[in-house]
Image (cartoon, rainbow, N blue to C red; front, top):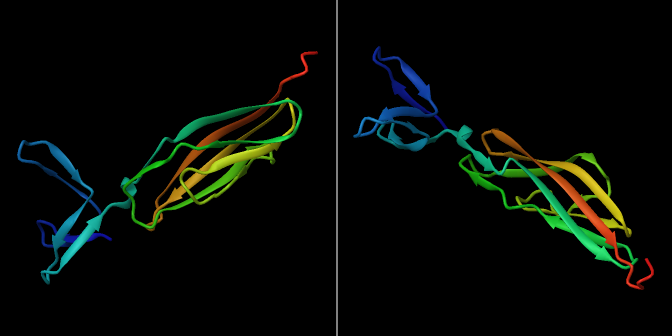
Length: 159
């Protein structure tokens, strides 16, 4: 939602955010707030492009040890911190490149678990991206470099 104000020439201008000086003279950007319109109705305004998602990139790695059987190796992505934006926030994870054995348990959450069924001494790597979009259409993309490893351990002592 935007707000409309009249400029010095009385022209009506639409704004999404504004700047003003605080009592100490420091310039502040107003990203959200309330203002009364010409009919005295209280309107809320915000600037959806203030959405910030962290961390933007991250390397995720998990290893599991085995004595021969195939096992599922998994790693959970760190929780994304999403600040700002217009609700609802939609998250969509998808594979960019890499091993197709790597899957995601829920592609619509901030901290999904990536996993793959691997054999002994096997590794799967891939790049996944998460696109975070708010209701105003502003989006930010994050990437995860995923490495899942199953390491064979000879428990017979013959290796």
